[in-house]
Image 1 (cartoon, helix red, strand yellow):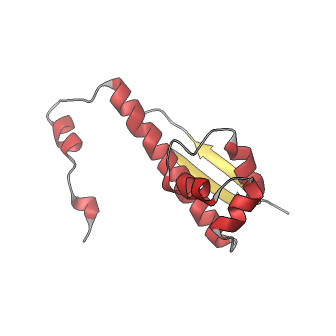
Image 2 (cartoon, rainbow, N blue to C red):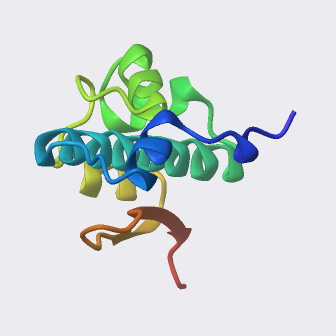
Length: 112
């Protein structure tokens, strides 16, 4: 099933000129960013062959916290984790934030 074809209720409302309040839009963007970060952490961890337990050990956190980070749970992520994640994943972190557009987070191997 291709979910990309589904038209979300908010997209339908926007097409009719009904817009979400700014605070709802900001919260939605926050959630998208956390989900993008979680996916980037997961992808990099898997790419370097590291388990959740291994990443938790490198970060000095619980496996549950690693799971929360990868799922985009706002209660398990704090911005101070970014440098620690980069070090633990031996990666460079690229963060793209453009107001009104989709944010993007990538972890890439550091240049030798």
